[in-house]
Amino acid sequence: MKLNAVVVGSTGLVGQRLVNYLSNHPWFNLIGITASKEKSGKKYEDAVRWSLEKEIPNKVKDMIIYDTDLEMISSLKPDIIFTSLPSNVSTVYDIELVKRGFTVISHASNNRMEPDIPLLNPEVNADHISVLKIQKKRWKGTLLKVPNCVTSILTLALKPIYDDFGIQQVFVSTMQALSGAGLNGVPSMAILDNIIPFIEHEEEKIENESLKILGYITPEGIKLNDRLYVSPSVHRVNVLEGHLESVFIKTDKDVDVNDIKESLTEFRNNKIKNLDLPSKPKDPIIIKEEVDRPQPRLDRNEGNGMSVVVGRIRKDKKNWIKFNILGHNTIRGAAGNGILIAEVLLKNNELLDFQ
Ligand SMILES: NC(=O)c1ccc[n+]([C@@H]2O[C@H](COP(=O)([O-])OP(=O)(O)OC[C@H]3O[C@@H](n4cnc5c(N)ncnc54)[C@H](OP(=O)(O)O)[C@@H]3O)[C@@H](O)[C@H]2O)c1
Image 1: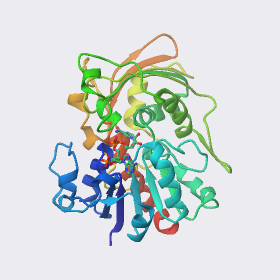
Image 2: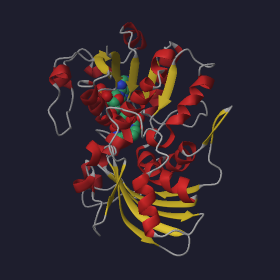
Image 3: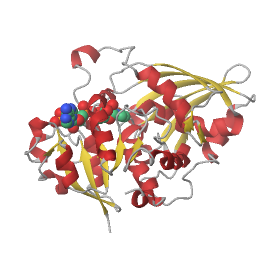
Image 4: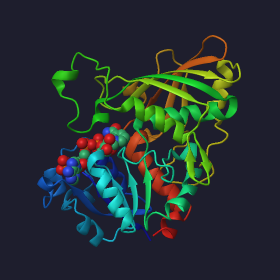
């Protein structure tokens, strides 16, 4: 028997990916979709500005879009709700829905840093689900957050190195795709023939969320990692999908390139390695040996967009290593991760226990 799912904010770039996954998922059944008032009451295929490579799934084409209204969503009695709304809007809906007892997986940045709200990148910190016990004292329902896109991609590659050799400092310079800003995000006149060296609030998100994902479980919730320093510098570039990150790390131990390659390939402490989950990539981290890889257009769909691709691993001075990472921002960095979180939750029986 499948669990009933609703996507709130189904017409945006993340919402479209969610709808696509959920229209053909072995564990979830899509029963409702919402968008803004202007689109409610319309057929999905008439209202959506569809942007994925594949056609709109047949199951969704004729679905009528509901207004994003708490009573309406509640009346559908979903087992799980995926929200992909702008963060100022999401703040209200996420909290009201968990107060009503629903399980919510939210993609927006609001509430991500609260200690009793798991901010999950499953291969890295699936065990942070345990703080739901603390959250349960606050609300009848359950709220889990999907991390910022750069942060999901970055922490996936950092985790094995952190576990094997310790990391003290991370400098990361990003080249972020247009889709990261949403369907109406960056005007073409601003980005054609251009690079924009600023994305509002992005650097704070990468810095803080990395410390939470690589943080510690305590009786009060997740405590931020206090031995790691992450310093990002972000850029919007003229690429449709796929964030490229240029990373410089200082490790505790002096390591060479082969140590790093082995650590990334093995990923010994991968938290979901032995779980059988439909959206889990076979290899969460893929290493490319070619001197000019990874590249967004060539490498973003590795592992159906759920793997990150690491390349140009180079030794710097003592204790320093540098490399490039690429990840698909609307899949690994958003909807794919959201679905994987739901699968982890279900596999842990949390979804049923917490309803
Ligand atoms: N894009 C990424 O790579 C990425 C990665 C990680 C996290 N996120 C986060 O995920 C969320 C969604 O991102 P996105 O890229 O999908 O954005 P988007 O393309 O702008 O889509 C936003 C969605 O929210 C709906 N919406 C907007 N205002 C609303 C309102 N007042 N009431 C009800 N619905 C409303 C839109 O409906 P209409 O179509 O009717 O306007 C649309 O379905 C954001 O918080 C974003 O920061 C995005």
